[in-house]
Image (cartoon, rainbow, N blue to C red):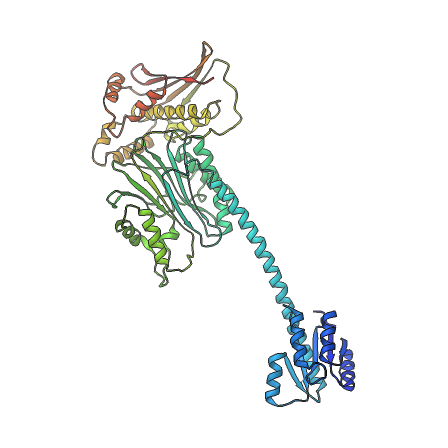
Length: 565
């Protein structure tokens, strides 16, 4: 409000109006006069004043009735009304103060009136400032809501990009605000392996939701291009490390489930312990957090080491964010691991997921959660291998269709030790003009033969170790140790395309520098049984290829694969 005020002076006695209006003018303000309440209301309809000095007893309409109508005209705006009256009893003054904002008795002290006007000006200024701030806040709120709707739209579409939304994963996310920094995603690789990711960004709301978008986008893109879960986690970390500020990071657990081999691989960085719950509702295996959250370490510091486990009886994996474990009831008690395990063990049916959701909801007791809550359950059954039905990502690739060509790749001990062989081969395979089924089958064949060359050709591991109690975990512990100590050894991979009779044939030769093995005996044993928890991969690769044979002392595998025209 400006220092010059528009002041409405209302009195039925002209001498009083003249005295007050002249006094108002000497204070530097503009005086507008009215001789009764009706004229005062009409004047306010034309233009609202900044202050009203109102007599109480007047003809046509008294001051109290005029004040009520003027208030209605003002809407949300505050107009200070000071009553000037000869009525001086306490009851009358209280009545006036209940309708107006101040009350002066006649004869009016001009010094007191001046002070009252100044006080009302200051209050009006504060009211105007508050109204302005409220308008700014409302505009900010509307803009923030639009930004959140936009971010929610983008995030929903990115998460909804999964090609396995009807698959074995169930998810529950309860945001602390409109937007959640917790995201659960799943996707099938071209080989049929199920990948899942639970990510919990720092904080909650818009900033947390934006922080997690690069992780989800990378997860989907690399899964669909056939990369293993370790390579995907490394790339997500590298991207977040470059994009996020130092005080932002993303706790995450990444899971790879091979339902054909009953093999699970987990990378856990900052997520509460991942559980495998058996049919008896007991915890069969746990994967605690062993790494910092994503985005903290540089690529050189990052360790994409996975923990492997093999399930022999069906069950389900359970993953949750720390918001679920820390959810507080009205008494301030966290939900905790004990209540989580109790919900699993004592649920009335076979649905641990629903039991946990019900238990957490009951624990909150109608209270808002202070952090985002998320829970995922993945059914692990004896499902047979079945590649996912999706198209291979469309990227610009060189056209190799119409010519004979050959490519030779050599990997030394350093590349093998750093587990760079399969990611590099996957990257190269993405450059070929392959259909979705061809890409998935060739990637599976390539992974199986490379794994076989490393594990048995170079590291001299014996798959019979997997048959012992806890043998699968012992096998992978021994593999990690031997791989870390590998100083000598090499793998050579050769891709060749031949055009014969107008048909394309892709030949892959994978040779390791190891001592080889009795491939005739191994092939015969593989054909006899498929019940062991190992040896299935080569048998599957043999069925997918046109032919699979070994050369030399068993240290070279040769695959012929017929390509579509």
